[in-house]
Length: 224
Image (cartoon, rainbow, N blue to C red; front, side, top):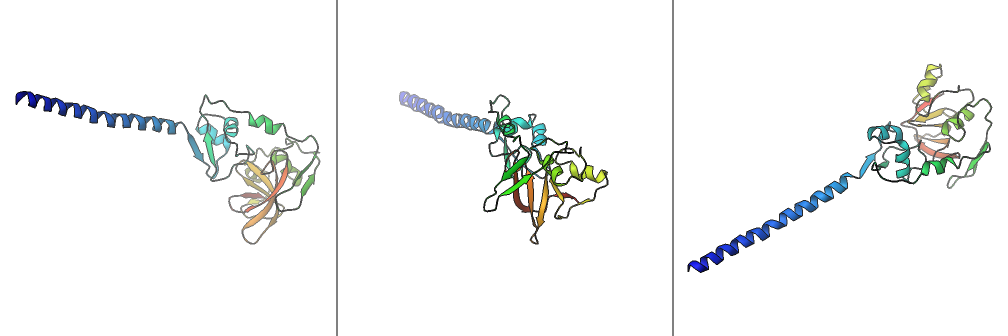
């Protein structure tokens, strides 16, 4: 009877050891998955965000953010609600920004055909326009030659124009310059449903191209 009792006890100990190993293995696997997920940082764009401000917060550059996110067609234009992936520090990325800059047309005529609309074309002159051709600020100055040069980057125009004595506000008007963080555009027409037709360079049509979009009037400031 004593021998049988010893075997039973040993068997019970073996069972405890075997069953105790499973939770430890499961915990290790879960920790690994958690670490993998932590490497993937996704930022949801909020009002006022730019690639530069997001890059500064996560200690990277707007160039790396642009290169890591193929859905971003223009480094100057991101929309509220967009999801931007922050690449790891050692991650190797394809140089998309240089490829975009290389598509800048040498001529002063630009054209873009928006979906389900007639071709929108523009031929402008750079006379008196000191902004870099191909960017939204260059086009805005072409459409509003009465505005001064050196109003800054898109996102700084409204405040700087106001400082120069120009009327500004939050109500859309045809002929005004509309501004969102990092981008400026020209208001072609305002509709009664709270939307407006804007024309822009370096927007949805891509770098150096002019395109038109119908967008909400909210979230913009205006230079009249």
